[in-house]
Image 1 (cartoon, rainbow, N blue to C red):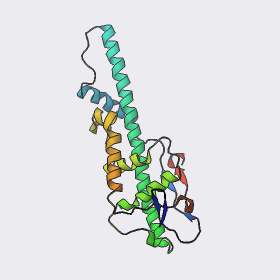
Image 2: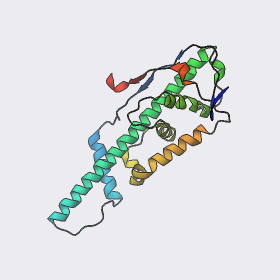
Image 3: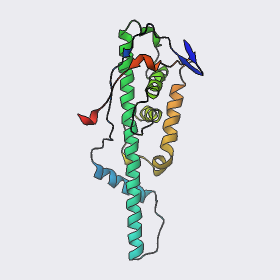
Image 4: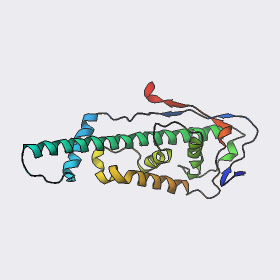
Length: 207
């Protein structure tokens, strides 16, 4: 095991550059009907009394409608960001599964992974590898994305969320989920040396 600063790296035999499976991800959030998402956002605003009562009158009514629309658009943006993170997390989890298969088939890599229950907390080394390789995500946080996928098996519709979750809580919950998962594996959790592995990141939206 190589140690560099506070980082521990597994010792990969030889000097060969290992090709890992491509990471296939939809980089734009996929929702079936954006108009329905907008309707759910409007209903959420009404149900949670997000706009305080205003004096009656044409001017006040117009201002309320403008604020309602702004809030709805903001909620939809927050939800689409959630979906985008979830999609990345789902793709990363599938990529880790494929990398496991690749490691199992290679004699020189087979012993680098411990056998334990899926999803393997020790496989956070693959998440760290993505970060070490500076994978371009379009602003998606890789650990947050994994946390979203670990929390939600499928992305719930917007109507299932509170405005508090969308505005304030989703980052905290996702990051906590990832950190809890990543630290469930007994030490030492060793990183994969980024100079020994390569892979492609392919945008499935371009198909």
